[in-house]
Length: 143
Image: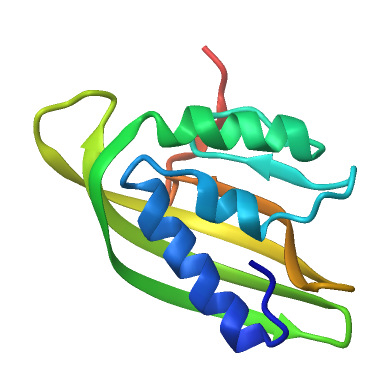
């Protein structure tokens, strides 16, 4: 996958999210650039750098989900220039998580950065975390 338009890229990214909450990382793997500078900060913690590490992290993340579906997006902002674009969104899904029996709601705040490469728009950075709601000041302390 590599869309030549930003609008097409957004459709591909939303499809990738729908696939990963079903346990399939291939949509995101296809979105990512193969360049050495790609990064991923997924909601399970840590950062991956370089396509091989990102792909392994996506596989581990996908293994935590099953029977999921996308339920909505709230785009806070997006910007597209000649060669770079970004989105800041809240993604809402529901899925069975970590082998759980119940389908649970999931909300993530997500920043994605895209680059226009020779084959089209590619994902170069994605950071997703569950801290959608305001937190107390003490929540940043490591205990």
